[in-house]
Image (cartoon, rainbow, N blue to C red; front, top):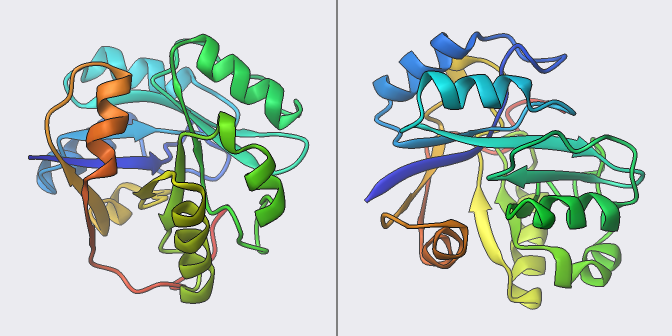
Length: 202
């Protein structure tokens, strides 16, 4: 089984504090097998991480749209910020990537209304149902939304420094390609070692 974290940041994000090497070292310490680097509005760090640790890294980006934020996973080029969410998601899918909605209902950061996520559902692959910076009610609402829409759910650490890695992850079977990844993720075991609402991050 692979240990996977699909939502974290490096110092390539405006609010990230750790270098790529620090993330690599910490991931190995936590026995994480895959990490998706999803810096805000840039893919530069993620592409560098893929070059440094190709067996570990998934290239991603957390993109601010005109509404909420969208993460692209398994992408190859930057998705520009401040697009309509439909346009950003179509660009991600056009690269063969997967769309992931982080902290979808958290009023403390850029988010979508539940009704809007439902409208976008055909473009959404994954909904984050546990984020350690969200309170319990917000995470539960996200889990209910993912269930109602029949979407794959994800737990992300939303780490902004290396020492925050390893608080939560998913355990899933080995995969081949993005479609197989999505199917295997549907049956992943979610592991949480930190309490909800322990802080506030973007």
